[in-house]
Amino acid sequence: MSGQYWFPNMPIPEIMTALSEWGLSVSTEQLVRPSSDFVMGVYSACLEQVTSISSNALQEPIQSALASMEDSNPDLYAASISHNFMLYHLTRFANAARIMDFSSKDLYHPDPERTRFILSAFINFVKFAEQCTPFTSGLREKSVTVTEEREQVAQELAAIQHTLSTLKAQRAKDEPKCEELRMENAAITAHLMVTKETTQKVVKEIEALKVEKASVLSKKENVNADTTLLLDTISRTRSRIVQSPERIKRNITTMGAAAIEDKRAIAQHEAKARDLQAKISALSNIEKDLRACVEQLQTTEKEVQLLEAAQKELADVKDSMEYKKIERSELQMKKERVYRQLANAQEKLERAQRHAEEKRHASQQTIERLQREYEQMDVERRENDKQVEELRKEADEIEAKMAEHLKKSEAELNELLAEYWKLRHETEVYMETLANKLKMNVTSG
Image (cartoon, rainbow, N blue to C red; front, side):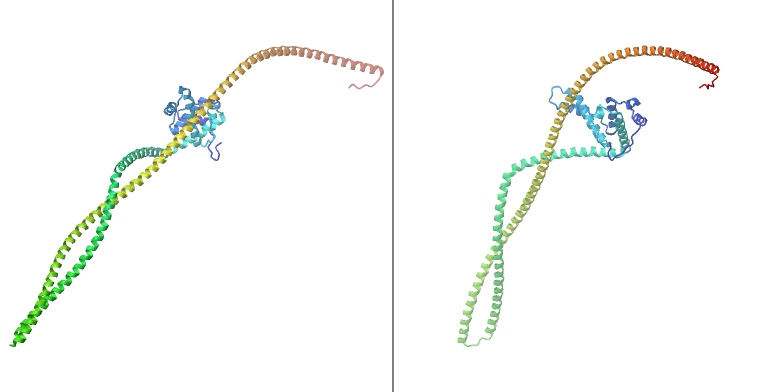
């Protein structure tokens, strides 16, 4: 019965001793001829020793099951549901004790030998559970902790779902503003790109103007050096002036023309210097504008970074929302599976109840039929008893007659034997007398 597992098949005294240790007083008669109520009580006590499940502990789920029924008279099913619940837990307990073929027959039609076998398995399992009490207590504490954590996670999930729904509503509310910000961001980005290109062009022009300014300054220094040299030359020339008027006039004319050319060149250089100064001022203004543009670009970049961070956070929230959607769909599927299992269990329960009702009705009919047969057999038994009594009386009379006849037969037999021996003796005397008279030698046999 136990397959590859083995446990000792305990004798009746050991079973009684083990049960008495748990406060259960049983007799040898109850174990030899077990009844349904007896085995139900003992099995329930063994179950309570290990799992703390008793009839009182099952009242709440039984009432919940009765409350969920749509029948107008749920109390009709209270006993059957209670028996089914207890049978379910006892079956699980029996499977744990390595009795895989435990059924309702062991409760309602107990066999003495199998009952002792099941009690041996249950007692062995209960003692094993008592030895493993620290381990099982730890497992129960962990189970309670896991249950509490599961409830806490369920509460956190509900809070997260609420937060997620709030974020969805806020996102839907902020979506137009986000769209406007996206459009504004796109426009600012395009403007930044154009401004960047313009800034690059202006920077190139500034670099070119700086080079030109340096060239003009170099030319101005050269002109100043040339002017100094000319002044020195004039001084030396004046010191070497001869008294020739014509030559002096020619030199003066030449030097006047040279001075005019130098003045013209100086005027041109000064005009260029003024132009360069104006350009430098314009470049300074452009540089200030560029600094302002760069600051605006940096501010825009910071805002772009903040926007990217917000978009990344939004993407994370979307991913989290998708993950929560997947979890929600999984929970919904689990809920649907549980509902289907509940519906199947209710359907199985209804079938079991119908089957139990049919069996009860069939059992009632069988009981009535057996009652009728018993009554008929009782009548027949009474008639048979009368006939047996009459036959017994007749037998007593026949025995008395036989005894009397036997006595008479024995007396007659004794008389016949006495007569036989008497005749035999007389015959022997006669033969012996005859032999003597005839002078014959006769040997008696």
